[in-house]
Length: 503
Image (cartoon, rainbow, N blue to C red; front, side, top):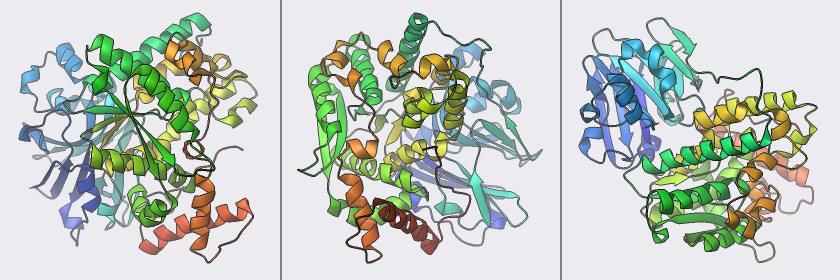
């Protein structure tokens, strides 16, 4: 995970602010100009800790700058007969595959990435982003709507006249000035509807998704656990892999939970997560934050998020404090988290209203296609703001395709995420801790029921409102504060819309 910036020098009259890039990659920083284009790279070292991982990386006439990881790069070396010893890191597999043939191999990449590949002779370039959009990328335009800059975050491209998010699963060619969607999920006309078969498929595919994210690192790894079904399944799989497949000690595995301090409304997340960690026999830390912490850090959090979706802001605040604690107090760099399960397995309350299995399938696909704007943005920004790399096994492209081919009837039953729960019912620790029976709670509720009321009061207080019994009115002030903060600081445009879901 890194921060990248690529821009056309002749279009820029000011030095870009790279502060937000540097916090994404605290291990190394590099700038390089090639022709009329300038590369800025801020690195978090995950695979290659030596200087050979510094970008841009060059092969023949092509140069790459990339934020992300290619999990299957060694497999691709075997398939295409590439000597892995020639690679400087995992991401320059894209150079060795042959940039001129990018449309032939792009769909074979399995990873979380956004990258620019620039030819120093022809001055043409390609831009590519992973199919889910796990790694962020923005494109900035001049007055003629010509692309002149690409960045992991918005702040450095404030010199642009307009911007938008680069669409996931697409390749842009500067030579032809076109976007081509290089990845789409293979959806069968006949959906899997055998429960026993589906349960085994979910188990095996998710297990492998967790595995490749655990072994693809040379730095310490940890898990987030809210005690909910999603993160608890990942932690249980991870513990199984850690001890039985990798042969490592449970003493070296750690999970983290966040809670809001309130003696009147203790965190249910902390309760369930603590019980699970004790059953698994691994290290567990519960970090607590307070109302005063929110007041003191709120503007910093908004600067990091760069979104005016107030519900995303709500859920981001606890995760920001947990990332801050992990970064300052431990040496963990790679963090595994459970984003994506609700979208895939129809975990939101309103989904019970879907009139048919096909409607449920369509809604799941719609949410996955939009997740890069919301939950993935939250998770990436909060972790990266403290020099941590987030990995999300539920959003592995192979696992997503697997779930998309499960019938909506199996995924949307009277019991929330029933098929996911049943797929892992053989893990006794999930039964013993009653996590398999636990109903879904919003992350912002599970960390402490008084967290949201306190947050609403804080934001209303900025408008002189200190006593308001109406939750609806308090939410109005919350929404107003988030929107006005960005407008006041000139950090937002209408391109960023708030999330809209059915009630």
